[in-house]
Length: 151
Image (cartoon, rainbow, N blue to C red; front, top):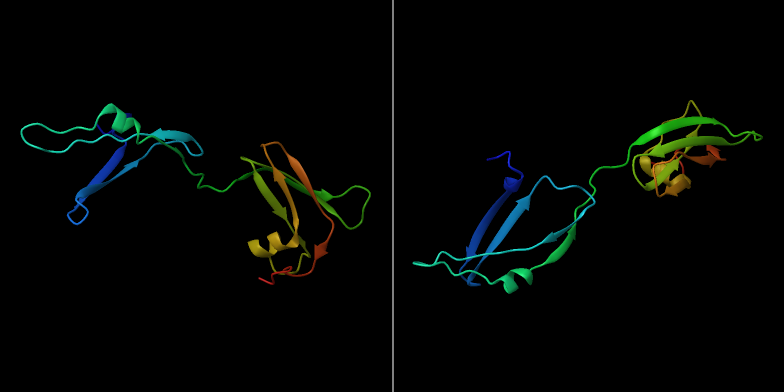
């Protein structure tokens, strides 16, 4: 049935008479992102009266390791901003993300245009993190415009 986890795939085959074989494509759904899977393929033809099948050794020779992709950007958990203690020209941003990655910050004057993502990146205030714990980025340059990229 469609609810059975063994049936979470869709496939197709196209026979290429010039090459003399069929190309098969199978899309498997319901996998977990950022996970390694082993892939094996097995086949048989539709010869009459008896199908010809690949051997176990042939099937095992198709073994490949594939890692699924992470197609969602990180999201912010903790997020707060405050003047950096003991300074007059710095703001400390405290944040956390739901996965490892890099966070960038930029500060602009209140009455100026909101920056684009490229302008935030170009400003150069970032931190690479390997976990989901809260971390801080001190931004000690408050710009009046869009930064190095201009847009």
